[in-house]
Length: 115
Image 1 (cartoon, rainbow, N blue to C red):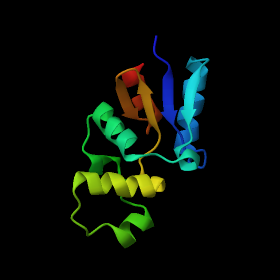
Image 2: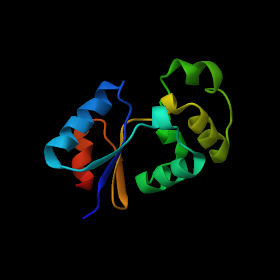
Image 3: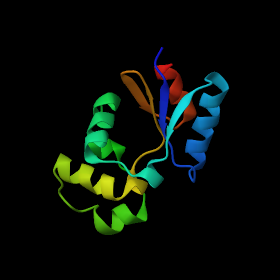
């Protein structure tokens, strides 16, 4: 059995909700507080691949930082991942991984897709 991993932002209510949901089902959860530890481009590439999405789908486009600094830029995928690495608050959250499957756990019911 694979260990569940959650890329968690403790300041986010949806992320806390997802962690509570997972805690009811699993004793061991690998919690990565990416806001504290940071997240590198290679890890972001892996997340995008596991999620089976384009990097832009990982961006929180309603964030003021995105709208003020990046919204109108034409970015290559690697440039976008570099921006997310430097500005992790722009990453959709939480991301939950189970083996070779992943989902964005908002709404928390999405998590059931990989359990």
